[in-house]
Image (cartoon, each protein chain N blue to C red):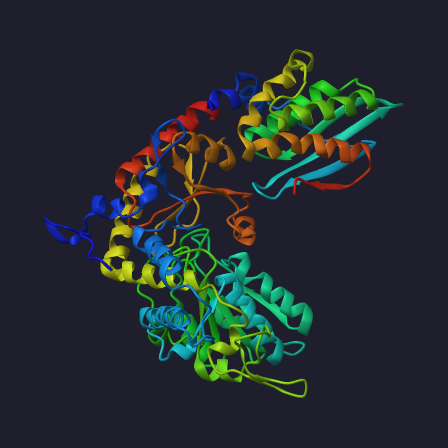
Length: 419
Length: 147
């Protein structure tokens, strides 16, 4: 890809945000009567740089054919691009082998795959799956469905008022019945960065495998699955500047190899007859049917783009935005932060006295400020705080202080209007 | 699209000071309404006198549009017959969802203040939740959802 001038010429440690923003066509548009767009809903879905859009267009214009099938040139090119994307993913999260990289539709499908393949074949009545109170519905409901199918039991580690998973309570819930731990790496609703290494160490010391829901972590920090020593790691492309419709399940090869296929169809087989079907090897065993090829190519381009900036720089820039947002928001009377863990991703969840989050969402939108309001697909978290909804601003490295200022101004407008 | 069209003075007033915001302990019918998108939850209580709505109230929590809409609903259907209330329900449904609805806004009285909601499609369900809940209460369903 072309070199992008992402560093501030005056200070190589800082990003040149103006140059970065020029790479994202959508950030240039205006909304609601000519107002600049302040896109602060990145935890729901990020935006795409031109490099990703172009990579997908180029693929469709030049190289599209089905993968792993034809001997013709286009099929070979498509296969090379698709498998090249898999290698980029492997390198990005430091997996040992591309056999450990399964392309799926997203984090949700990754968790469902583990539940239905690993869980359904292994778990028996009375076995336990341990999650935390922080989880997104995607890391709750697939386990509940599995529990209904197998008689396994879902256990939930509580959280503290600050929004941290209670480690002592977690270790007490680990037992000889625990067959899997499934934890968010970063909470989508609150932004809490869960110190997963100690949770993983506690689980693995008892021989319990660990799945991490990394949907909110991978876009914002360097993730190394070998250093984490987790068994499964799930994430989505669309939260990390890539296209929708594709995500990744990383699995430890020894576990994946022993797991039965999840869906049957083309590409996941070596030979089919009515007497006996021989399944394909990893990772194809879990990729039935024609995959999302252009989306994989787009994800590969997104990884190239993020790496051209550097995950450490991205994390630092986003942390600065978080600190600034916390300072500014704290000056608004009646604003209450929800989730105050010391280590957080650039997500701020809050409520405002006398103004319902849903009204906030509309009023902010009329000022061009896009945030998420509601339960954030984490209704247990809302229930824990006795809330039906919060407002959530979530930042990406392409956001600016001026956008946070616009958020703060719009919150004052909301207070005047409804408070 | 102007915010002032949505948050008119009447709406703001009814959100700050919702009317008939109470339970009717000996209600003849009641139903719970739920909007999963934003978490609005409300309960509508109805006390009947024959086929007339002798008293109506609500409680619960929600955004300004859903609270004000419920408050306005209680004021406008109290004393109405069941068929008059049903007719209001269908007029409100048209007012909230159809751009060129043949609705005589003036005849709706204060309810006409909700005519700005249709410019905000994401908020139509907030305004209509209480009406669907009233309808469910009168038809003896216990729960209604906007989904």
